[in-house]
Length: 222
Ligand SMILES: [Mg+2]
Ligand SMILES: [Zn+2]
Image (cartoon, rainbow, N blue to C red; front, top):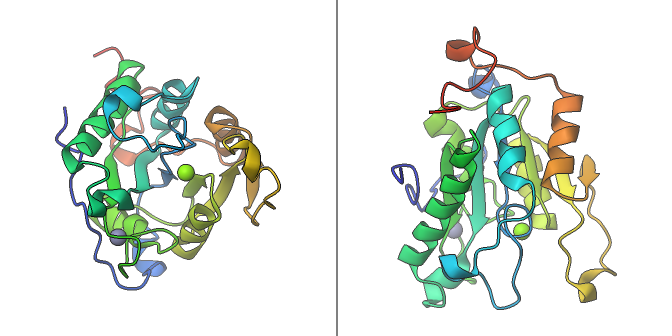
């Protein structure tokens, strides 16, 4: 546990290189974190005591794992660069998220976080697609058949630039954000469980080749 958390903090991909060379990879679901996995906080989620995983989220991720999707959480955590969030606390938050998901038979294959400052130009902070690109290169993921689920326009843009289908979560807004118009995502869903319903309805499960003879994750029940 923890071996996949906090790795490859910075994604130094240049431009998105989606296309033929990634067409052979596994389909993945890229998940934004705040507002999708856990409840957003106006004071930020700075350590694991402030982590509130949203209802039904671990089970929803487990459904994706069982369907054969690789799961990558991609999160902008720029306050780390200013010392507002401690990087080790961030790692622990991600370990707790992983544990909650593994508890019900799912698995996050990689976490990617942009820890660069708000005014740093980097290739990883969404709406740049660098975190998705680097995870795709490392894990052998295809943009074809993959999805990006997030609650902000920058999530939708990053997913689109990577070449994934996009779902915007609409249920995470603070009251004063309700006026904001929805960006053009391919689909909209109230929360992650509803987004997973949409993914599994839209595209039938695609088991990974090495687990194609199995109908459930081998980690289930272990
Ligand atoms: Mg978010
Ligand atoms: Zn960055």
